[in-house]
Image (cartoon, rainbow, N blue to C red; front, side, top):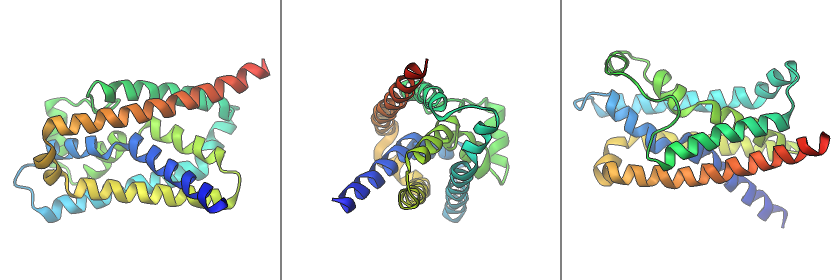
Length: 214
C-alpha cells in the first residue's frame, strides 16, 4: 500500500508539473524563434539548456522559495490562494488556446531573441516555461511533502518533468508537422483543464484554512 501511495503521489506531481510547464506550447514558441534552416544540433542544444534551466530553477525554488515568503511573513495558505488564482488565469488562457501568461512578444522582440544565443534562458526558460505558476506549484508541493522520502519523490518528479520538456523541445519540429497548430491547441486545452483542476484544489485548500483562522 505504501509503494502504491508513493507511486500515485509521484505520478500526480509529474502530471501537475508537466501540465503547468506546458512544454508543447513552449515548443511552438521555440519554432517561432528559430529560423527554419536551424541545424538539428542547435535545436537539440537549445532544448537541453532550456530543460536544464527549468530543472535548476525548480530546485532553487524548492529549497529557497518558501524561505523568501517566510521572511516577508507570508504563510503557505496565502501562497496556495494566490498561486491557485495565478494558475486559474493560466488555465483559462490555455483553454482559450493561448500559450501562457506573459508570452506575447512584439516582432522586434522575436527578432532579437532569434539572434541571441541564449534564447534557452529568455524567453524559453523564463517566462514561457518557468513562470509564477510553476514557482507557486513547486512551493505548495513541497509543503505537502511530510518526509525526506516524499521530498525525494518531488525532486524525481521535477527531474522527469524537465526530461519530458527536453524531449518535447528536441522534437518540436517533428511534433509540429505531425500535430499541426490545431493539434498543439488541443493538447494545450487539455493541459489547461488539468491546470484548472489543480488551481481549484489549491484555492479551496488555502481558503478553508484561512477561513478557520479568522
